[in-house]
Length: 181
Image (cartoon, rainbow, N blue to C red):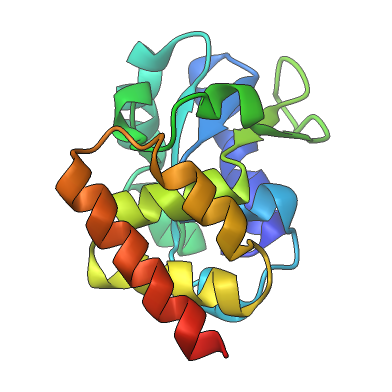
């Protein structure tokens, strides 16, 4: 998903739920801080988001803009309505969100704003999810220089995970560090 597609999804979500601020917690959140992120980080065609003031409206987003919806079939990308509990990011992530204001879209009630996970928080949330594709995303973000290892290592202790899994994340990040050279 490219930045203009991301903005389209946010604008469409604003029209669906009548809200203007959306928290973006999935991989597309990288577009907040890095609108021209490298291709390997843009493979997902899904934007995980929820209305900041009314997270309970996330289901409306799924229905109108979700996987298999007419919106998805027409444009090839879609929104996945999630909730704040979905983000397994370091404590305090809500204070570090990257604000991305957008122009109003036709039929909208205001100018939508995406509030995207800060890149280090995003990468650590991906590490916490722990799927192969999440580790690939983390490695690509490190290699591209969009996050630094010191910042990642510093945030591991603040992840809402048990000590064993935090140790696993540190070990994986250490492998990325040695592979990077």
